[in-house]
Length: 268
Image 1 (cartoon, rainbow, N blue to C red):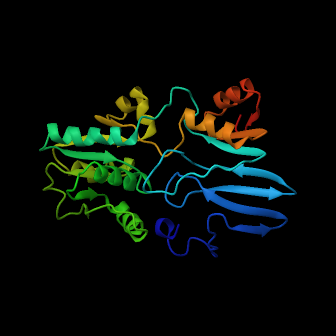
Image 2 (cartoon, rainbow, N blue to C red):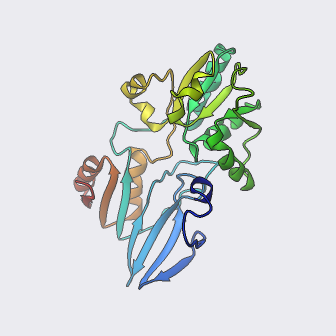
Image 3 (tube, rainbow, N blue to C red):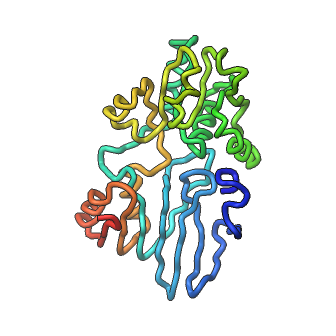
């Protein structure tokens, strides 16, 4: 939070470790890894042996740049539903990342400008590129530098990366460049010549969305659970009631009802 919003973004901070149980106003609170990004957490609330688990954003697929999702049994589950439609079945991230490598091989003189959120997604893409053996320096937007440095401090190997600045932006050739999605069409990106524009997002599964945003290289990599992850997690938590928010609430609600699970949408 301090990296993103400044040292004084809150009046008071309390660090809570995963699995540490604290007591506030009659309720026990415990955090568990959500697997969304580094440090993301599910929140378990307990009172008189009744449990409510709030997932927040989460994914259950393995990710070397974040803690592994931890399944928690609960009475009531409050789940996200960003990709809560059966059409969303995310492919293997390593295979999607190969698209960047393969495109670079076929067009070695073109810069590959890939849109990725500065927190979490960019570091995951870099890690996947390293896993595939890409050892060259990777260029990054300035908004990613402090976050990358923090990931390094947590022993997450990102290899060599260089911030794009006024001294190198006009001379880039055949490089992989990561920038937040908002920067893909602004003045900053216009200075990068001979570029192929890509985007790393679960939404790239929707071809029309990629086309509307003029994305030439859609990379389907998400830090949110897809349909199969959502439905499996609901079953595995053994929740008696499911509250659904942030996404495709009605479809997931219908699936729960069909499978004999009491469910409601928090944003009907």
